[in-house]
Length: 255
View 1 (cartoon, helix red, strand yellow):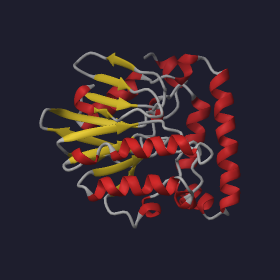
View 2 (tube, helix red, strand yellow):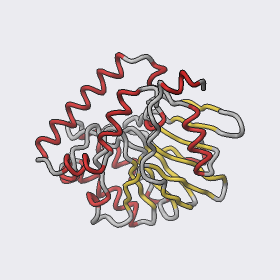
View 3 (spheres, one colour):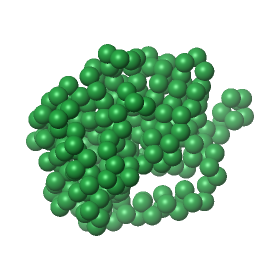
View 4 (cartoon, helix red, strand yellow):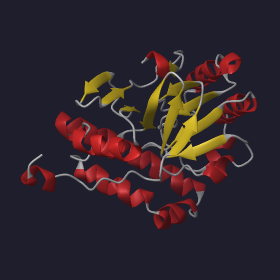
């Protein structure tokens, strides 16, 4: 990357330090974009969670961001059918799984306290998982690496500031839902107008993060398009497509 191009990129903001998990198996979901107005899709996701129960002990079940189409705050978990999803995730945790929900661009307001009663369900920005069968792997939503999209990264930095998050969560749920839906509409319009290269991952940022975390492989979502990229020096990126209603989890060892 030359100096001229580097100046056009936004500053990399990874979020909280990745949590490190050592597990026997890793099951992944990403970009579900669930909405209370589409209860059939929520029910299908619950069925996908239920299918993992026999293999939950010693496993990690990771939702890699954008579980919700537009998350407005803790009140959303009380809505049907989101409450059933909470129960499905809790059942996996009780069965011995490490359950983690990663923040995406549609559910940036997720906080650990919103699921405090469900032991074993964690909210993170990213995780590093290790399995007996392979090296450590960085798992995150992926939007933090799309640094050519400077307008989006400015919004991302703004919404992830602790003071801004506290301010938004202190507003009424009606205001938060209006804002979440407004941002969802803006996001769709922006994606439709921007060149594809502005929306993609910047390899240099990804490789730097892999080196920082002692990993050689990363798995992300966000881009809604399955791809596998090799950056040399045994550094690889697996991009998972958006979840399709009725589909089962991706298993990390099979990627």
